[in-house]
Image (cartoon, rainbow, N blue to C red; front, side):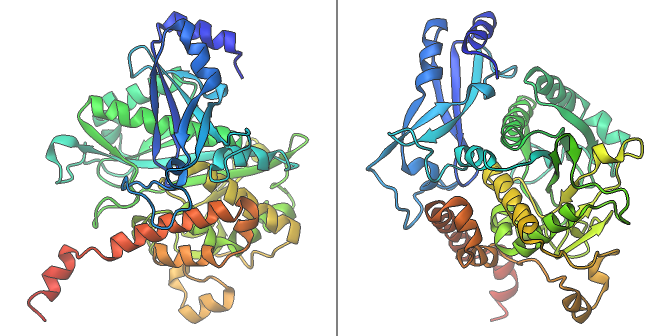
Length: 449
């Protein structure tokens, strides 16, 4: 972590006169204030933070309306305290710096509905070193054609044509990411027209969430500069591939990857098997957190390489948990699990913490993940899948939310208040979505009935 003096020195050198103090609410909207500062006042802003109404973290939604039934209202305030480790000079905004904060109560305890400080506290009690890699997919659409979705390019999957056509925006994203200390690992044009994927290098859990937030902000700012909309939405249109955000995870102890066992057929240690067992055991309520929007479930359908069944498999891109082929030069170092049931609507700190908690519960209880799925589970009959325990994902957000509502495990992990507030938000999403009459309904029902 840079010292306060080092931060102030960087800010003076960059001529910083604005500071964006960000927080990520429970609905995964990036919000904040921009303080107008000079070099002398910047120190005060970094140390004192900002006061907010307590309702802003969990009582507000992406619709900018108050969640029905929220326990928070006009009474009560919390303090957003900057985490100096997230201080960055913004290359895409002149004379501007940015920092992510944590909410604390007036007596300086972590605010019970802010997952970021709660995740920090959770990690203090875990006896593993955990590494998280994030792979966000997104579409670049031309802003001036909206509401029609016109992609930036019409490349084939992994085509160098896509690399060349998007080079001007992708190169700027890569350059700015490097300036901001966001470590990118891979980039390529994905399956959809105008769809691209960036892989971030592994980070420790909180820093993985921070890097993702900074990357989202960076990508959207650069895209707007070129009159593009960068959308991480899971399924922007019916007839195009969905965008996921695969999570890669490995656990280490004393410099050893505890997921790896060279003697096992699939290179998995007992610890890894149990971790997978925990993920699959808790999958239904977990998906209310990892696939957090009504739109998420339009991506997670069978036979679409997105995964749709509760199973695991070596090198199987239709499984909920994939065991990727490791680097043959150093397999123990590169070995990890890939989780397919995640997209960018997930609140990153809540999602990462919930995945870790579910997997560790599997290790503690030695949960069996069942047999591996070695091909597309959709090719099996429903009875065959049922016999193997490869059940279908929740098909709608409300199904996953009800599973979370009836679940006790995640209440113990995060507390009743956070889980109850989260459920209220997501039920509100479902209510607004489900009460909307669509063009599909009018097209087929209006005259038929």
